[in-house]
Length: 130
Image (cartoon, rainbow, N blue to C red; front, side):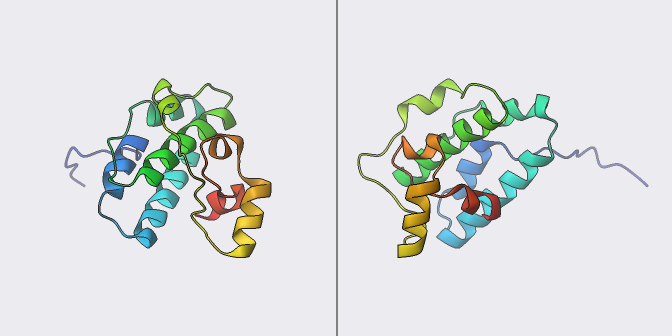
């Protein structure tokens, strides 16, 4: 078999941000799920590099803040500090990406700290199945 020189590169949070631009909500959640799946499969010592580069603006403040919360949350789960770029991103008004009564209650109770402190209310379970 002949190699074409292309090698697998896992999705970074910066690349994820670029892919979210102009995408509808369904596609955005699929991309988040893909990112999370690739992140989980990377060896722990390589994961930090997937979070370090700051994503450009997506055109939607909610998603810009979501990416910061996601990067901080994943870094914390791996026992690392968050990349410095996440500190400047937070919402002035709460955002519930899954805005049904049950999802709101679940998110208020179970949103990871990195999301809660930025005003993004999404439960950890939703991140696991996103």
